[in-house]
Length: 113
Image (cartoon, rainbow, N blue to C red; front, side, top):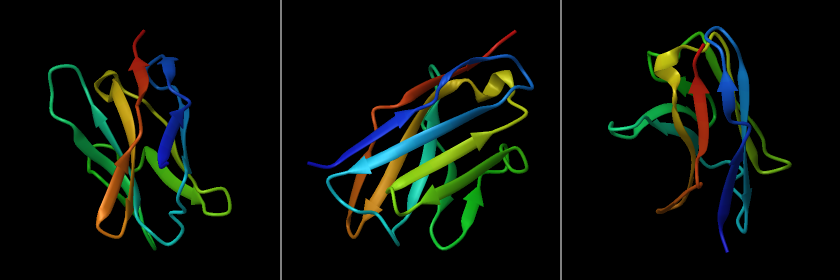
């Protein structure tokens, strides 16, 4: 029943921007934490940003990425500016509801000239 569907990934040159979206269905996540993670080839999945009564970021994306949410549409966004090649990864949406947590299928972000 619960689905998280990401969109907005693609190919962008260094210094460019992308806006990722994650729409949750089957359950409302209003007033519950939502976050973005990413996983580059051959590397561990890492935390990127989260929103829950505030916003939080890993140091490597601070001042470049902005997480936001539209609780009326059960959607979380990740605005990514000043993208770097090292930002290349599959980006995953994550949502928490009580003791349960859910993952999206991922959307590919490639930063390359």
